Length: 226
Image (cartoon, rainbow, N blue to C red; front, side, top):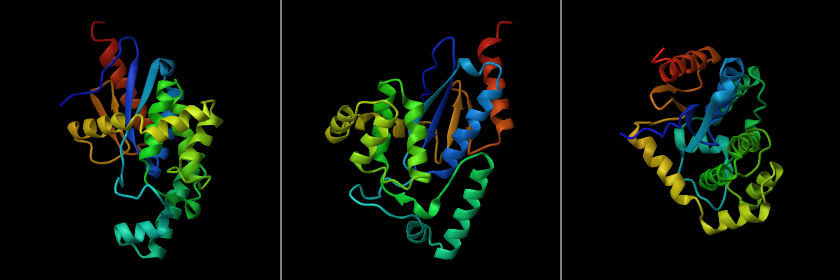
């Protein structure tokens, strides 16, 4: 089993997530809140890795989220709507605006390739955040290349370069490598957080749980010889 590389001098948190996963957005926000409270937060690097919850979804069209839940999970529409309302209420507690009735479910592979492009430009976290908001709040189709290029331009990336990368299939191998590594690490669901390549946290845990993981990982990395 191969763990992610760990650069010297910084504590790295590797995160496997999917843009269409509500708990990934919630978990990412809770981790960010923990980092704001962590004394060494400025010395922590968060890296994002691709994971697709529904890689079988078509790439050429999108579907209504409630219809998808009914088809994929067998939930009656009323139950799907009630579940979404509970998730939206939890998100609201930490300041997120989930509008799940307007979500457009689609294949997220192109969005993951865009995240890798943004990483090559030093804007990975900004891109992840914008994609989450586009999917859960704005009701945008994050499988559409024009939409993705526009979102990338909003955070300062070159629209034409993004279009070229998406249309050419660039970073496809990077997505595959992330998914393969997730399998090697035994990751079966997201969000999944690996602190310093050694300590794992699964799911959208409370801020206090992330603070504990950060503290343990920091001490393990920097105070072994103290």
